[in-house]
Image 1: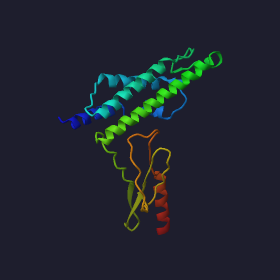
Image 2: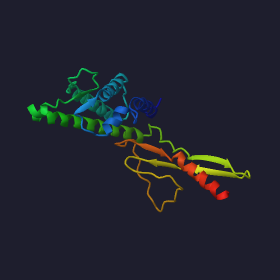
Image 3: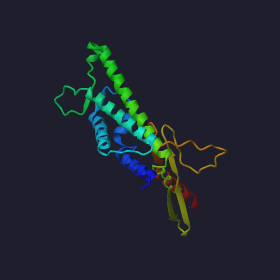
Image 4: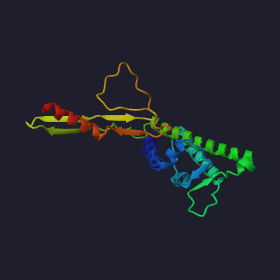
Length: 225
């Protein structure tokens, strides 16, 4: 196996452990204050770190090796910061740990320093993850994004058996952008945006509602009466 093929296989294993839609990654990407950390988040980070430690990946490309180690270091730091939070005093099941609110009153500096350290550790994980994904993508070690699915299409027959085809167009939005479904218009000298394997937010894909198709069908039959 060539060095490039070996690195590609290793990249695939990492992507299996760290998919972009992992719940804990999406939660971190929201960049909300971490005074309270759900156990699903802290356990997700710990599980990802444990999985990466078990699978010893020695990239042959120095930049990949450095990016991989940097992500491991960032995850370890975040796990350590979560270890500095505490379970609440509650009789019910524990679902989160927290930076004790009483610190805000009794130890003001400790309270805000802990929140700052948690936020910095979270941001470091997001940055190191982005760097590793982009480094692997630049070397062609990750699969190309799939083309968007075709819009829905329905073929109906009118009273005289004339076929009628109604299309439900496809709409796609990324990050904070919006999208509307309709007949695509040719762009006028537009430059395609640069692609990155990571976006610091959730990627949504929207397909136009079936109600739009129903309205179009009703309007057609109203015209052919």
